[in-house]
Length: 631
Figure 1: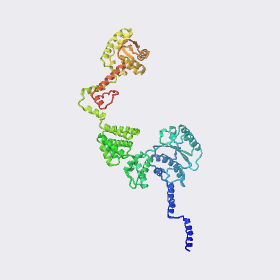
Figure 2: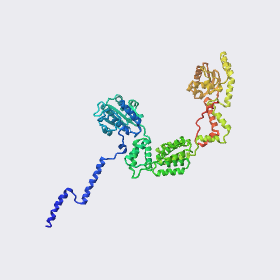
Figure 3: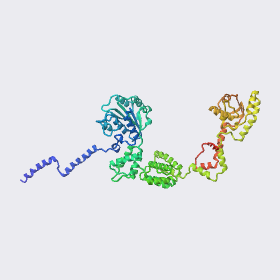
Figure 4: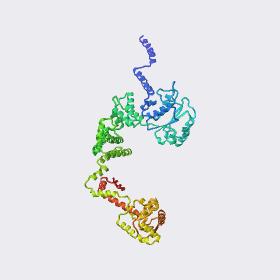
């Protein structure tokens, strides 16, 4: 009986446990594990994480930030039934071009139980709104022009545009990055874009408006979406942080807003990254600096202070510390440039705090640095950092390149500016007053003067003395004309630099320099080059010029000179050739004169000190300064 009684309960116990299948505690625990993981997978599929840029994407015009001008224009257009056939939305990345296109498509096809017309007031979801915002509506087609660039893709749109919409009011074609379309695709779209069917609307979005043909732009109503200002981004990010129940300091929000550079999407991506690395405590500004590779503004100002004081070891040590803490060399140079801009701006505003600086201590430090620094030093630092930013980006070792930029700034800090150097040289006692007067007198001379060489002057005087001899060999008519010419005051030698004053409809020529000046005024470049470069004057008289032509001159230019002078002056001019050498050519005289002027300028003490202060500097030209007008 003892054996039979235990045998009966076993089957009954087995029947009870067969439905539940718990053979043992261990087995039940093993089979319960899949039941715990399954809900995790199910919730993961249903509640997949949505990035902030998509989760907080605007769904109507009231959610758009920073685009009030566009919204007001569209509101007035819809109210007056002036709805355009095509729209062109342009702007930098992340300002809401594609989002605005979807909202506009939703406004065009807005339909509820009480409203059945295009409207801007679409806060309440309509019949077609969910599908349009999700990008799945049959009558709202979105196309990425970056992957559909050919004429075949546009041909499909043209063919489909002939048919009326299936359920919505309008067929809306949204083409993103429209500038990527090929030339043939643009040309194929022009006719349909200019005269589309009444039930078709086009909305284009692009970040490169200059690449869109003007023929397409002229057929669209254009809206330029602006960068979002920092204050609006800060308010927007603060609101999102409150909705996400994440604690973040205002300074951290400000850093993210600046790093976004006017792009909402970029800012939300950075905010998403900041939320991911946050803990139970609030996200601090130092956390954001570490995440972005930024250096503290106060520390950047200390680095600039060491640079402007010429303390190279301290500047290199601070830069090494920034790098060891995770700072990006490229970003550090950018932060330094921004700090220099803030200092320069504060100095230009007479000590007023920079609006971008939020910390009062930072504003005070910027104002303190702006006081002793000159505008020349600050602008020189800005140019160096601007060029250095490009160098660091191209360098194989960014740390070394950035360190060289810092050293360059440090050793440039005590270098005087050209204006300071000139001022110091003016105040020194080593500069004689006589040399100052001589330099000023030399600078006030006209740029073109007759040669001051004694030999040249003697030859000119000799030629002037021989003029009657040449004239005596002519006929009575020629002699009479020559005597009339010589009876005029001999002022032509004094006005070589301004031949226009001596020219009339029939200009008179009293010297060879007048001949060259007349050729220049007539713009005969080829003849002027030949006369200046290959003609040595042997003798000159009215109506007759005797030249020695150097080797290399064009054949026949002497006859050309004679005929053109006769034509220009109305008087016959004969140009004779001579085997005797004459004066140096006009070109040689000008070069000799310029070299003498250059040597005289270089010999001046002020110029010597300037060239000494700037090694490698060269004088590339001399420009005369007009004397001040006497009152």
